[in-house]
Length: 432
Ligand code: 4AD
Ligand code: MG
Image (cartoon, rainbow, N blue to C red; front, side):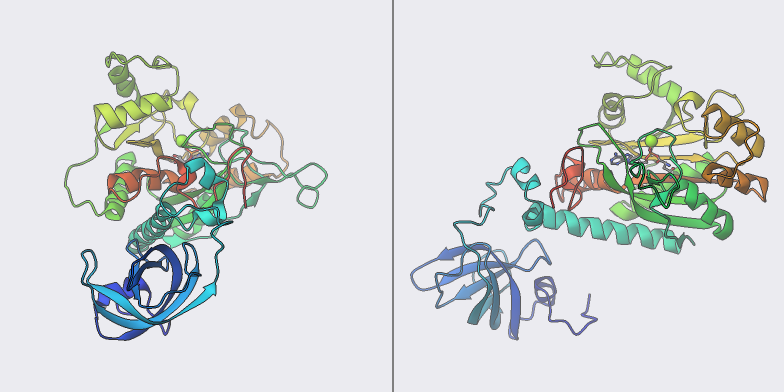
């Protein structure tokens, strides 16, 4: 991309322009340094790209060590070594931020364990893995947003403080008693869905990408206490269309031009596949039990060897807002399972019929019979009483997307959602 601002060019922009004659200034950290008799080679990292830029220094002071922040002026010349077309022949080097090697916690040569880095989140961001992950995260956000914007969706900001537990799962962080929201009970949102549905009822096609909070006890590589969820809702009631749209959106983000369609299998057929697999699962699959993570991974990694939509789960396993199918047993929903992660997305046609929704809410204990008091849930019901539109939507965990796509595209192997966000929060861990 041509520079569109007056800022000095980043290393990424310099490398892309490939101009070998211009004088330039770069500012960044020393990622590695190699001193030889005549010259010193320093690899400078300004965060803009994985490569960094090789700087060649004739005179090099001892203060230029791993992690030091430097500003270098010089001329871009054709590189004699392999790897890069250009390198910086340095005229003048200035240390702008010294870095004492005796106290700097990071090791120069990937000697930092995952656990050590998790305890040093502020510096962890300087590692190659995290820089690449953060850039991929930003790229995926842009790609998905451009797909949604081009499809006529309006980006909406939804609230974080709320009176409702959107999933009814009792996993929300509550504001401490006595310090409620000016006297009213309050939680941090677990999902923007119910609010987004109100935006949907006004704007037709909407989405949001917002932080969600869950008092998760699970200490797995798939769960965080604070994570980001992309959610979308639009006017329609076709599960087929819902799965197709999600598939198109992800293929757009991945840059997948293959025509092969991702398989769709009902929950009951998924159970049959698992039962027939002869696999020794810790939890034997059963039609009356939800899918476990080991089942999800088997389906996506071993059986289908790629993403698979599991649709029409039993009503009893899913939240109150999903639309019942005509069989009375199942709901019009899907979970998209992907390798390495298991469930990446959950979505459904929403129950737009007031009577059916009211029954579900009563059953879930969210409202009570004859209770006319207005609460957050009655507002949700009110959307069905006043011009209810058939609609549907989904929610995708952004960190899980990173874990899957990072590996799929061979870009970054995070392995865990804890490496998919800059400042992860999970039980007992906050760091900075
Ligand atoms: O399946 P979930 O709980 O569904 C909902 O919250 C719906 N209201 C979404 C919607 O339809 N608008 O969460 C959706 C996705 C999951 O598939 C998963 O990718 C991610 O959010 N997720 C988490 N990611 C990281 N840490 C956690 N604790 C997560 N819980 C859910
Ligand atoms: Mg789910």
